[in-house]
Image 1: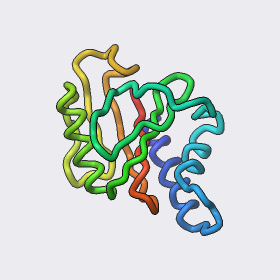
Image 2: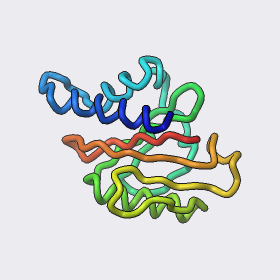
Image 3: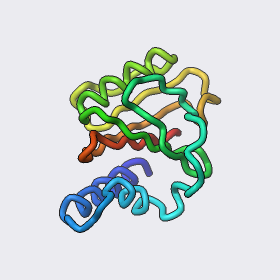
Length: 135
């Protein structure tokens, strides 16, 4: 199921890259995953409590298992900074540095809606968008 989700994300990103008329590629990726994935309400409080300059919580879906963050850093810097912030709050890295998706696990499965998370990074004009799926 996760592999199918990843394939869907890759296809949606490819469509965004190929289509220059799209104004906000990241939102299109989210809509491709699930048209109702993110609600239109205020962002609210960051469920992961990420404390990192330049990385801000934007929105979460209704179930709280898909989170959207915006970073003012590029993809590689955002990956390192996000990983460091999550490790400092108790998460353990499960992926290698050269992998496209950042994978972490948490010993207590009740935290932030899941015991594992997968973060994917999408380059934007202002830095990058980060989509996190909590499992």
